[in-house]
Length: 407
Image (cartoon, rainbow, N blue to C red):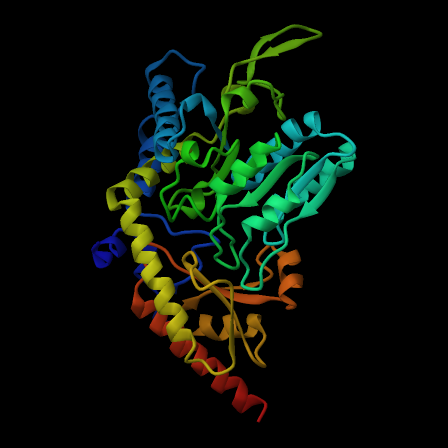
């Protein structure tokens, strides 16, 4: 894999920030976009901008082909059985909310259980809190081991005949933990529960096969995988999506409208009310083309090498605390003694190094870690070991700077 050539395809990387070459280490929040994605969206707006499904004119047909073609690319990318099981959403958050509101509220009742983990992003906690309040169901949390991983024995002991939904992140956006989704799904199904997987941090970085995982719902976002913001995907098994009611009503999602009643289109369109994010879907399709050209196996191997290198290099920083397991996805979350993560991120930014600092939309996990906030460096296909060297040097400077300030 020629990382230098890959970097050349990302125009934003070739600039200076605060007088230094940009070192972008915040791809877990949002990834940068290659020319292929930018040009695909520009081509839509310049050449065949039109609404989808509704018109018979040429531009409308081209737009529909682009939009539905992107759906087929998503289907193939995650190995879904049918493109009808691929629903375009605004992102992972919208996808999970759709399941929690439409499936959850219709199928949960008092005495039922929703099983989560403390490592979930807020978007995979709050919708289930609301579903539990609306239905009388109870939330249960899987225990976590000291290194931030899950024990399958604990999973087996936590899921019961009362469990109706198990909602788990494929990869933690803070710890980098890669959860055993296939095994968790098998255990959930043994008790008749359905699984909802937050794939926001897995789909961009590893090959995902929803049929192999056998999960019932799977959600992810375009902007974390080289695609545009405002577009995401909900995969759901057809037998479940067919029974679910839409959560948005209006144009596009209807079959027939009378003065006092209406009927809906088939899946996936009944969940895509109004004018969809056409350019976003086309951009997501182009992002998938880019990732497949590079090869997901190549990306995963490259990022595993970066993560291992980062763990070793960052240990050179005196007083650093790194959170999460040794084997992890492409991110490292840490704190440095006597330096608030916001201060560390600010000093690094002055060196042109972009990292994330805060609670990362995972406040229950911060409480579990017994910290207020952390700093996070996350890597993607365009990052290099030199980027990690720059981060390490920047953190050493940060430690020295605050040591001098408070000396």
